[in-house]
Image 1 (cartoon, rainbow, N blue to C red):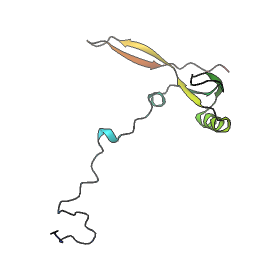
Image 2: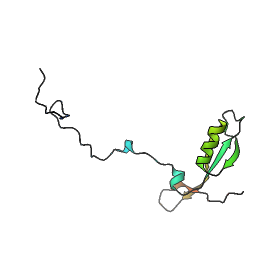
Image 3: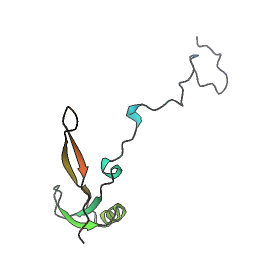
Image 4: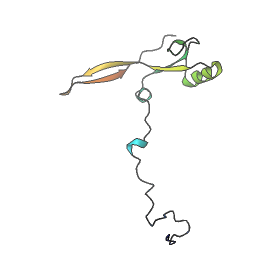
Length: 109
C-alpha cells in the first residue's frame, strides 16, 4: 500500500527530497561556440554553385551570414562559411605542441 503523507504541491512521491535545481550544469550540458567566431578570425560566406552535386563549389561571396541565409532561401542552394587558419608549432615548452592561428587578410573586392 502507498504512503499518503504527501502534501498538496509536494513533488516528492517516495519521501525523498527533489534534486537541487540550482546546481551547476555538468560539462555535457554546456553549449560550445565556434572557435572561428570567438577567436576574432574573419568569416566569409559563399553561395554554392547550382551544379555542385555534393562537392563544395563556391560561386558568389556574400557580405554577411544573414545575407547568405536569405540568398540560400530564395535560390534553394546551400551556403558555406569559410574561415582561414595557419598551423603553427609551439616549441616554448618541453613537449612541442601544434596550434592554429587565424589568418586576418583583407578581402579583395
